[in-house]
Amino acid sequence: MRRTFLNLIVLTALVALPATALAQFGHPMKGQWSGQWGKDSQRLLIDIDWDGKDLVGAINPGANAAKITSSTITYTDAPAGKWNVKLTAEGTQDGKPVKIQVDGTLENIGAYYRVYHGTWTQNGVKGEFTVTRN
Image: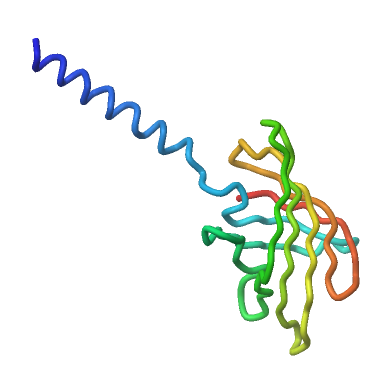
């Protein structure tokens, strides 16, 4: 009887652990995001990580990537609340400095495919943006 009870505990643990591992995504902004911004629908790829204190990463990773230099997140306590996320990035394009300000709202926080959208400002040019977590 004792052996059957121990086997039941082991079986329960083996079934429960993968389910809990799948439920944990980490920081809601962490991951790769793709979408577009502006009237010309310029392609975007944003790679975001969480260093335990700030969001870090790059916009359009590659030779001309813009490094995220600062981030601010404000949110409500409501379970279905939205997060306001501001990012600042700096990089170069064609040898010239590029400054990017991103002011958006994160939605579908509990879902794997989250949506981040709002206003994108790049070197003084403003446009709407929408990216989805890949």
